[in-house]
View 1: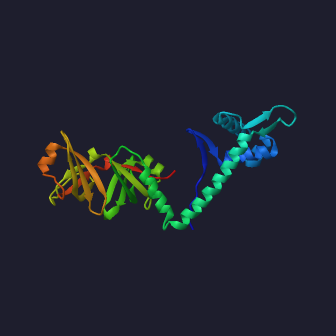
View 2: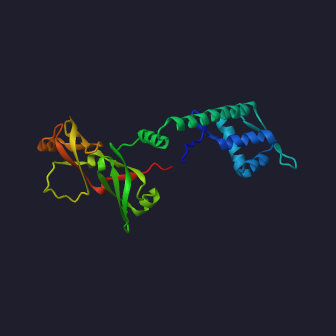
Length: 265
């Protein structure tokens, strides 16, 4: 059974104090009175523990750990009241966080899918066209791989990426992915059974909107199946094709103009 998991971190004014690992280190320093003993207890190297303490002290703007250097044991360490409050706040937040994740699992019909969808909504990119799909096939080449993706409505996109990129992204049949297409890379044509093009992607749809500018026009296209994309074409092309809302068109995109990405961390 799949479960939702998440991690909690503390940040203030853009400064990241860290998460559970650093808080656990502070807690053990308070219990054991020694940075080296605390490091051993939480499975952290002595050097890593000292660096973590220095970072937390610097980020807090005031000491969280007071150290007394010297002695056969290497000195001692104590927590300041500020550190104690930080531990308390984190523990309270973590308890709330756990209840939130448990509640999310209970209320969502498909929580993992829903979370992935929210993450897609928050993605920021300059490319106007963002489409989600599933890899259906990968044709491996010496330099470039050809990636086929099934998108909403039964249509298919073909993209060419370097073999190295395909491996890095873990592209394989069944993999969820997304594509980015610049509006200027989308060519608009009128349906014609005799039309023959070298472009691998020829997506059928209808014009949903036309925004006429001085030189260029922005044409929205609703693809068969529900996806929507935008194309930027010249006014001359707009007039030549007599494009208006409801006009049946074909959105043409070269495979090399498609960027493929995944949501893996």
